Image (cartoon, rainbow, N blue to C red; front, side, top):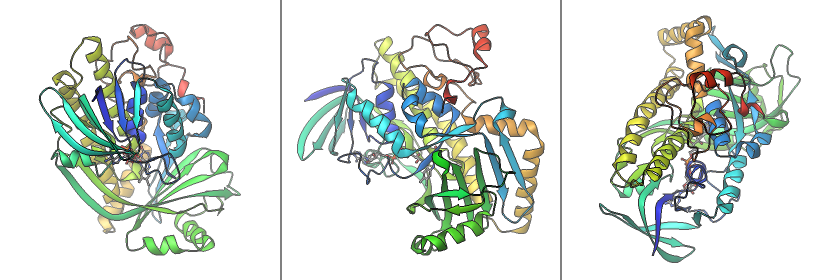
Length: 451
Ligand SMILES: Cc1cc2nc3c(=O)[nH]c(=O)nc-3n(C[C@H](O)[C@H](O)[C@H](O)COP(=O)(O)OP(=O)(O)OC[C@H]3O[C@@H](n4cnc5c(N)ncnc54)[C@H](O)[C@@H]3O)c2cc1C
């Protein structure tokens, strides 16, 4: 029997991030991951390219991982949103927001490699893989688990069980936590392309979100001149798009996207992901916390799912460090209650925003179409609304836990008490309490801009 402070089920992008964030806190951690190794079939460290908010880059910085991820990450300095065939469009610019980049685009595989290397090098983390949950019992004092690791049964106990096992979370289902769920009937088809002959009017480092009658199409700037494509297609169209020859795929994509990136060439492998909205009705129950896709699975239209999951990690890390510092139970009320109260409203807000966007822009009804075009134009013409949206998507609104300020979870600095702490401030390198003067002095610089 092995005893831990926390057992994390699921070592994907979010579960591994939590373990790494807590690696130096003295907490005893086990991670149970179903896959055998980080090969091409890993379900989390896969072909996706992820638009990371500035806040997420900061969190990786706090975890000491940004230097490893940055070489594979491309900055987003401009966002161009348009409605194909209609007048509405909107821009977001890093310069207007006073930041070097609005966010970054990083391959999930590069983030997975950095996380995995750190997991394996951390003596306080026990990585159990390929691991499968066989039995689970929760009592007032402890969680008891039976895990099959490479075919051998292991008995574990823990103060806290964290479910980071993705949208189909076995832990969530086993413990009867219910969800609100709706399938969109659409798939996201991803691929990479390399544009050639980009017109001079297109600024470098621009991410495009183009709404079309059958769903949004995102083009995300990557390193080496490539672009990541996220093509939302009705599920009935997916087999045909996957089955196109490379040339026909490029021609279809070009028609759909237009000429803003010149001629699209060299398509990579195409993979389709079915899309759904899922929100857990409760984020906690006795000695259990849900994080990442196990708690919320979103439409990728605004690139928010992983960013939201990383914020779960940052908030939970603060709470667990506080519990450790005050010798409180990591699975007790001082962690579960605040986690639920801090995370549930943001989950609901971001899920509502992405769901609204996903639905609004596939609605062909004339008045809705006209309204959304006016909305886009209004957004472009109204700097305060644009600024608010940019800050929301940069992860700059709301309470900022230590990691979100680029500080390690172990930092002695107290968590920021209230909303709107300046994300753009350079976090102090030594963990001293932040004063307003110190924050103001540090506001100019930006460590997450080294990509
Ligand atoms: C096409 C697409 C594009 C996206 N783009 C963006 C973007 O630009 N920005 C953004 O922020 N988000 C984006 N997302 C969302 C993002 O990919 C997810 O939010 C993120 O991968 C969730 O990570 P996770 O670790 O919570 O879950 P997962 O990635 O699903 O990982 C779950 C892990 O748990 C393991 N596991 C599952 N069951 C068990 C079990 N029973 N026992 C042990 N281990 C188990 C799995 O092997 C896996 O490693 C996108 C999603 C899609 C589909």
